[in-house]
Image 1 (spheres, helix red, strand yellow):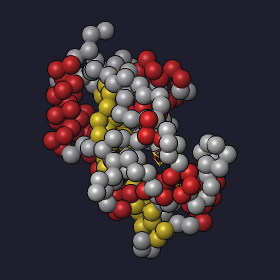
Image 2: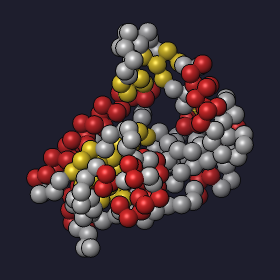
Image 3: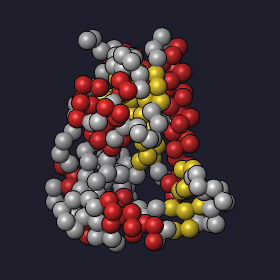
Length: 218
Ligand code: SF4
Ligand code: SF4
């Protein structure tokens, strides 16, 4: 299939204009490794490209969760921004004659894994996507489209982590002590150490993100 390089560049330019900090394009052929519900065709027939958009979490408030009083629902500030950005890209593609579907978080895609498949950056020892400009301080969202865009080359190894283990040493829950990320340890620590910014706003432990030197500027 011929991929539209010109349209890909136009989308990159448009994303920059509307405030997307990170953008990547993944080929659906790489999604066979994921369960069926996490593949593009489960959301949109004839998907040709998965577009990943990222927002730099430059301010702690962007990474905060808001839970209205007496509600079980919560909202994440950066997620709301990313959803708006996805709609803008969807409209842009619609005007060019292509259908798109914004992917929900659940069941959704394995966002950090598909970002690595799109060539945005590797998965680091901190079990997160590492971007060259922002390290792991990014929040992600994806849409899938019938537009045949130019896709990135998958990245499988983290050059950043070769002589580093700062995030592993810094984790207060020792969630990496068995040589891989232990989600249960991480969640247990987070739920018993929630940082409350106000009655209804809290933030997650970000030590494994903050301790990573990649993307930090003096
Ligand atoms: S979020 Fe905190 S507890 Fe969880 S892995 Fe990262 S540093 Fe460890
Ligand atoms: S802190 Fe070091 S080991 Fe951890 S993700 Fe960043 S570069 Fe990799």
